[in-house]
Amino acid sequence: MNKLKILLLGTASIAMLSACNNTGKKQNTSDMDIHQHANEEANYVCPMHPEVTGKKGEKCSKCGMELEPSAAKKDRAFDVKLSSNPEVIQAGKPTNLSISVTEDGKNVTMDVVHEMKMHLLVMNEELTWFDHIHPKEQADGTYSVSETFPGGGKYLLFTDYKPVGASGNVKMMEVEVKGTPLDIPKTATEKLVSKVDNYTVTLTNGNDLKTDRGQLLKFTVEKGGKKLEEKDIEQYLGASAHIVMVAKETKDFLHIHPISDKNFPIYAETQVKKSGIYRMWVQFKIDGKLHTADFTVNVSEGPKATGDNHDKHAHH
Figure 1 (tube, rainbow, N blue to C red):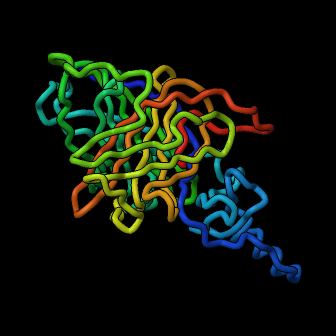
Figure 2 (cartoon, rainbow, N blue to C red; figure 1 turned 180 degrees about the vertical axis):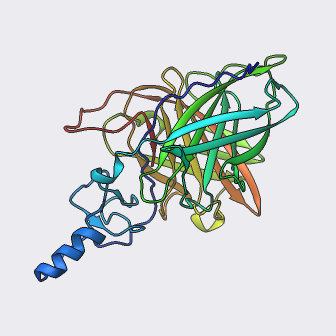
């Protein structure tokens, strides 16, 4: 009898933020050249600026987002399944999680995104505990990783992956863990300053977060009264930091990667679809050690954008 409860909540398009390096300009060509351009370049477009097209792996010249396959290539259905060993998950004991991603019954080949083929973001339902782990590909095409859940209750697992030739996807699943619930106080309605490992991380514009617009995230990092610079932050999984946002009520999910900025050591651009209270985790590395700062932010309603089609689980 399988006591593991799994809830699949849908697939979302993913957009990843990083530095720009593509001009996005088209040149006059012959009919043959135009045909080649349509096949190789126009198949990839910016999710926020559809007039910017290019090749796989290139980035938008306006916002830095990695170009995605065009709409014609997005309509693919992937089936994500999760199993655990042991089947009944106990708090405080290692559990092997196995994830399969299939299309038409066949295992899907993954692209490497930020140095990994799969990212798994794990948190408890109250959003007071967080982990970012990476399942490894197995010989049978599944992905496996060990996790130790710290307390009993419901946990959310966001599987972040990108099939070859398709847009990135996020699947949310739930598991029940047996044992004593976590004794962690619930989060306040706002937390814009986080102290972790002798570092003070501040979301300087945390009081001005709004939906349906290009949203900046500006973080300062201080230690011993000294403000760190961008050069002080080491690369972690192909980015200067990893930012995860999850809505407390709806569980809307964003996985954001900062881009370069001389004024803030951690600086990102994103777009939030729904207003409400969000929990946020910022992971950054200094001197070879990974640090995780947590925040609680209130995203208010912004001006409605026309033609907005962002999904609830997004990857910026």
